[in-house]
Image (tube, rainbow over all chains, first blue to last red; front, side, top):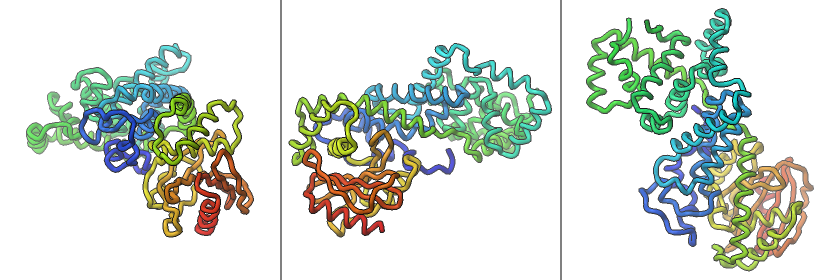
Length: 217
Length: 248
């Protein structure tokens, strides 16, 4: 997410303030709901597509990325992200104020759990993939760790993917998507303290493979 | 050497900027005198730095955008038809008659509509206030990069304000099953939509009419251009000439 400057990715708050006038000044588009300026609620209510474009489209990459790190499968991630984004599009009326991204991330996470139930173990994911990684011969692991230390993107992604799910999702939401502890706690429905310990655990596991953190005794 | 056990989680929160000022200060004072906690917080910073140095977040594949476009277009279509049939107030009063007529007409066109119909339909839809532009600006340097990453070609963007066709903005459209660029210009009270996509067409402009709209097609540099408007044919021909001259 660093260095990519698609205007598409502008923050919702900013685009509301300086964005197309048509979104907030359209006549006959329903009474504006009360809400602080710059949040979703300050927009009047045109049909779903413009609201989708304005509020949700900037987070399509983030939705896909979270789905990808959860499912660890490109095709599944696309299905999960599509389902979540369409759910968000249909439920856009329920978005009153508040931040769009955490709301969407929670929908993606639920879509992932739905998919995992439906998929019923056909895709090798979940604990099975973690076990497969743990059984990788030591010499392969050390070659992989060397790549990680060089900052190799594919190796780093694989390293994140081998983290157990609760640690992985905390790390992705914090260090890749830059959400706050409070937002992550709401998305993952656990207390903040749990978020903190999962994040610390995830960073320690990665840090050991990067060679910057010593294993704890 | 390791961090004080009761401080480990707090060190992460400190590095993440999640501690309030009082707790952050207290912990910084401690870290300054505790080698274990100092090493730990340096290590946490190193892990974070390495994660941030690499583009680890995935980008959505174009196929996902296509699937979303298609699903949303489908979900929106019945809504548009209902609105046209009920005869709700259209934003551009001058175009009400033509619009209601053309949109109602499209509601009854079976699948396999012609390209011209699609273009006219896109023009009609664009006159709904919220759909005219996705990026609203008269600055071509804003419009052009806006298309980056959304379509796999670079449409030429010029402002023809001095010739009487000010640039209003741009948006994405779906024509004939592909994503195309639409540039929006004004001609007095009228709107000109210029649809652009890769393809071959003669450079010589071809003038057509459809449902009261004027359409002009031409090609240049591997791109097909379709200008669509309800302004008079002469004004649209002037627009085509000026745009083609400015992008030569």
